[in-house]
Image (cartoon, rainbow over all chains, first blue to last red; front, side, top):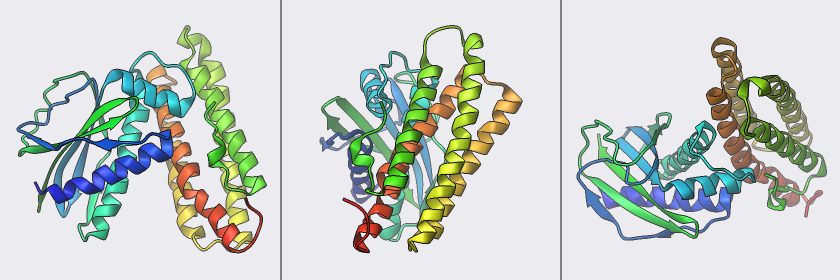
Length: 153
Length: 140
């Protein structure tokens, strides 16, 4: 897993958060972990196919997730229900789609598969994955993690 | 309220429709998310959903006609994005027919609809305004 694959996702997350929620994101220190396990309560897994193979896991704290969807919808929200989960999945989907565009301009032709939303922490995804790189991103409404396991085909 | 002034593209016809569309989606989401017995709300949800679906289609048609009128260079790409969105709406219409208007499915649809609309208006549609301004036409 090359560190160079991380940048397109960080850029895409920064742009999408700014555009959709008027939020700045600040990158924390990169770390590696052995498994793809949701670190926070609301997560989205997106598979990557093409020149790069693997998965991306976005993991958000509950309060941050509710706040994100509140900013977009203008409504007060209390639960991680299907509406919130679906909106979160789409935000992750849009970030991943934009990251694919950045990767394509670097001559990696990749596609994403539809998002899978996971509610709950430390849920095993039963996926045999190589080591993941984790990039923490900080915002004024909370901090979230992007786990990446991408290998060249 | 979902609408933000930064979503304006500087073309009154489009901006008015976008504001209306955001209002409709916002009302729809509020009726979906309102507490209370789901069964008692389904008629209202169904009605709002149908109205909104029609409004989306009408808006796309008007926006595409406007793009043709101003000879917008990304017309084909933009039309394709609209077509994909219509296909998504149609897929949900089939699922509603088959699975019923369950709270879970309607909420899932609501989440997709809201994020798509925000992203489309905040990103793709802004390019229309930029083109009009480049041509020295109406706009801020």
